[in-house]
Image (cartoon, rainbow, N blue to C red):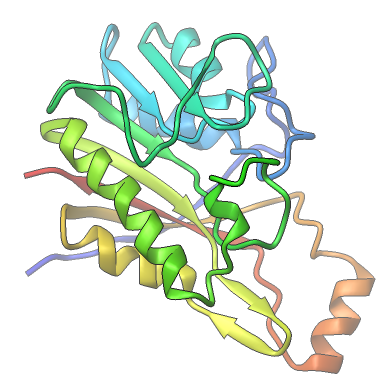
Length: 222
C-alpha cells in the first residue's frame, strides 16, 4: 500500500531566487523556479540529463544549468533560442535515456499558452479529449525515463461557469497507471492573482472556493 505524505511547499514570489533570472515571470503559466530547484536538488545529481517536455519560458533550463545538470527543454511555442521545437506527445529521445523529467502542462483552455493548433492548452479539461492527449505525453515520459528514476508534474484544478473539474486528481489517476507515487505536494503561491477583493467578492457571489495552489505529483518509474 502506498503512503502519501501531504506537504505544503511555499515557492518564492519571483523567478529570481538566486543571482540570475530563471525563465520569465510574465509568461502565461510560468513555472515557479524554486519548485524546479527543490526537485533537482532532491532527485538528481550533477551531469544528470533533465528534460522538460513543455518548458515554456525556460525556467527548468535555467535552473538545471545553474545546478550543473544537462538539460533539454522542448515546446511548441518557441520564445528563446535554447528551446527545441517539439510536441511533447512525441519526444525525440531513446527509451530509458533520461534521469529526471519535470512538466508543468496546461490544465485547461483557461489562458492562451500559444498560437499553435497542436497546443493541449486549447482543449478544455471538461472534455475527455484533454486527458486523452495528456496521457500521450505521460506515456512518452514513461518511455524515455530510466528505470527507478523520478518525474514530477505540476497541475491545478478548474472552477469555471459554476462547474468544478478536478483536473489534478484526474491526471493523477492517469499517472498511477505508469508510475509509483513518491509524494503529493500542494504548492501554494504567494502572488496568486485570485487573492484580490474582486475575486473574493466573486467567490462569495457564485459560491466557490479560491484556489491558491497547484498539485505537484512526484512519481517513480519502477
